[in-house]
Length: 466
Image 1: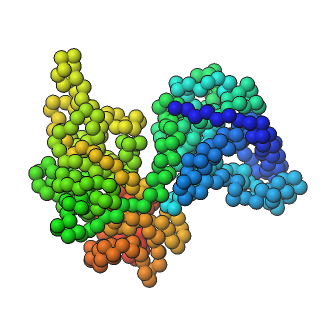
Image 2: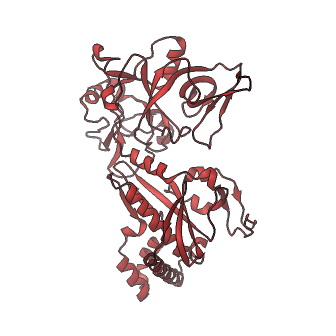
Image 3: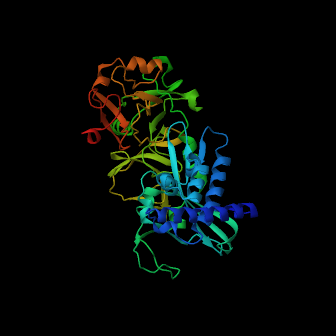
């Protein structure tokens, strides 16, 4: 559902001043031999961009007010008086500083305790009501800029591009998803009869953009501490106050064979408001095929069963390989299609994320339901950034909880302060290898190697450090 925001005269006046100042910056940079790209010279681009970014920033500030997130814009890190002075006085000594400000790397940044989300706010003018079947041309050159993970699309609506009445917030899209869209080449005609001035990704409002509240949920979840996983608990507490936590591969393999899977750890039921019984177990989700019901890194509590009802989210073993789980296992929503005579005609395993295809099962398929989802517990989002600092946010390799990694060889800290994890750190196996873990460079889930001399204390997979 699109969100509508009215624009008052004060915001229009500020946008006009901003547009005028941006033009001064362009003239200043051009005079001193610093070129600028196509997207900084479109008439009223700075005007509608300022309005859209202002509205989007307010939306984030309001929705994240109850969190510890910091919301700021690109220009907040600059001394604007210094930049204005340089442009007005034609001070060539500050041209590098002005250029850095002018070529923004993002529009809005949201800093959590774990990472920084860099967001690109895209704007367009329309005198009509935006429709779900519209497309938006996203410049290829902008999608390829390093750093930004998400784009938020907003239409400025009014009588003309200089007289805006409303901002219509369409939603957000992942930059990596935009890169999967088809490209309308430079010089080709758009659906509205205009000519593409550059190569553009052909994004669709009803296919590629999701409600911005979903993005806010992702950001909030990234600040949620990881669930505490206990390596050992007393036998009389197991399946009574603690439920087992497995990897998807281990759980599926053992359940299919009728055996008891090897436990990776134990989760206290009280920590997730679950009444523990012997039929419950937890696994950790990977990938975004079930977004926004399940985020990558979430903990999923399942009730062990071999049957399910239409619409249930199920843990399944089937014939095809699922890259999210590196095997023939998947978490999907069950869809049972019946004919007019109430006989079952088709079984589908459906993703909640519409960028993925449903899996249609036939009578010949070896298809087994292993559990039905009962609860989702937010986990830490995948960490994919590796700074060059001496310390960096990371995760304990035993429980997955957030910690600060020390890179110094004297006392590498790669376990958190949980007594259970400290005890686990004494095991010799942790001096040789990691268990399943997210590589800090590529972000992928692998059996990451640990080598004290090469990687110090970072969980970096073999492919990245070699």
